[in-house]
Image (cartoon, rainbow, N blue to C red; front, side):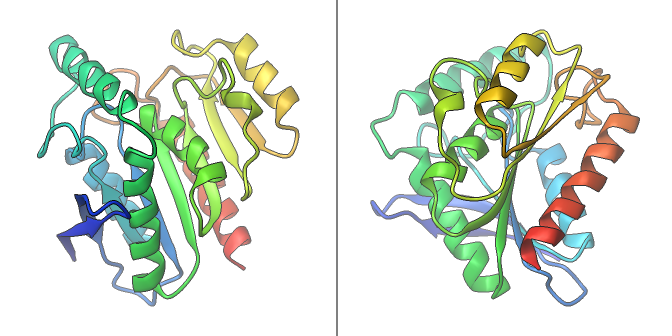
Amino acid sequence: MSHTVQLKASDGFMCSAYVAMPKVPVRGAVVVVQEIFGVNTHIRAVADSYALAGFLAVAPATFDRVQKGVEIGYTPEDMAVGFDLKGKVEALAAPGVMADLQAAVDYAGANAKGKVAMVGYCWGGLLTWRSAELVRGLSAAVPYYGGGMTMGDEPKRRPRCPVMAHFGDKDHWISLESVESFKAQQPEAQVYVYEADHGFNCDHRGSYDVKAADLALERTLGFIVKEFA
């Protein structure tokens, strides 16, 4: 069962979120953080998959502060729109979108009555990495090919929860050299590299790699369950 809710951030901003409810007893919650394409069909399907695994899944619309109702595809034109919206969100004064992610974690924890993990993809991976340090109430954080998280000052963050990160060795956005540097700076993080491209988890993209996606999901679920124990 799924529905949409409005999350109230600490500054009073109302952010929409897709919520997928498990049919089995709830094992905890997972906040699913979108790519630059909005809470689209793919992200809703990802949330649904976590609900099927027994987790309350919450996917906040992290573009809402600059444009409501964003749901686009994966064409070059869509990508240009997504990058533009991402830039506008990144330019917001702090805490900006981080306040919406905090609201999503608070909602997830209260409604699941248990622990909360965050899983994010592409830009959502970067936001998940930031959330591991900045957002209260997380028991685990799993960024997938987080664009930017291996560059600049991002690897210097000090996460307050365990982190597992997934990358592809064919990713032209994230170099293997930067991944290795990230690993050296974050020795406590579990970092996996797959024979795959950027976006390998998304079955709506040409870069989808079922073998990598399945293995990453298996590892992610095992990691979350262990940290929830």
